[in-house]
Length: 347
Image 1 (cartoon, rainbow, N blue to C red):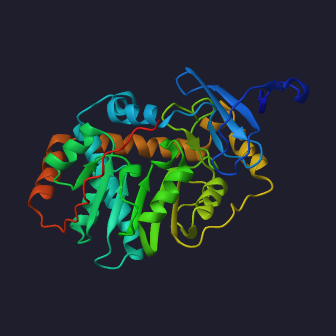
Image 2 (spheres, rainbow, N blue to C red; image 1 turned 135 degrees about the horizontal axis):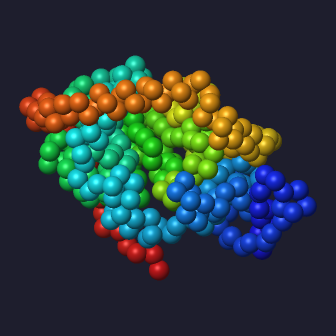
Image 3 (cartoon, helix red, strand yellow; image 1 turned 60 degrees about the vertical axis):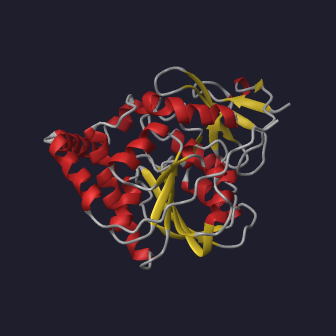
């Protein structure tokens, strides 16, 4: 039986005791001892979230099964997360701008002709940005509705499917994992599979919310779709143990999102920090609601977000029409990935 300490800020250490059984070990350190740090999600619905007291990795206390994850992301995620099955003009415009940002960020690390592949490509705008810049690029996306829109409207070579369906053979020079790793049922398994997709010297770009920084208000940090929450320590340690060494930090320590570039290397033991638990807990406990919202950087970022949102909505259909026209008329290198094999159900 696993010992689990229930964290309550107002309780004494003697009161923070409870027992629960979780057979699944920590994805980072294989530990079993957990502390619950939240009982509800950002909407106030029940969602016990726990921290591994050995390494500081945060995850749902009860992680979904592979079948549950497959059904959710195939059939429910877009409506539950975005409240739309067919993407709105605003969503396409924002994804397009993200694609341009990502191209500019990563292009200095690419050589012409290197192959780019995105896991969890969404609308495919990241893939399209690299295609239009002359790189062979393709991707995979579990959500059928967004994948269909991407192929039919934006002419992006996406395959509907999941990472584990891909043949494990080195065939890509850069893999993109943009706001995906936090959704995965087992980030370790996914990183090992991605390592198998990379050519020698290949790179992996990972972007996800930065738990080391104030990326969400207290009480709003956890929600159902994010199975894991990473600090820079836990993410780098996990990647290192999967044969991926950090080569570039493309974000600042206080940025809301981690942006890290890894390169293939030999797998090694996780580089666990002795203060991993303490570091993560200090990040989680750093702010209360008042101090979080009164930060000057928060006020500035909210103003910028509002300005971007207004700009995105102004003449949004006209902007969308230009994006679609660019996708349909501009020549691009297309490297289509083969259809994934049919999965066999686990016994």
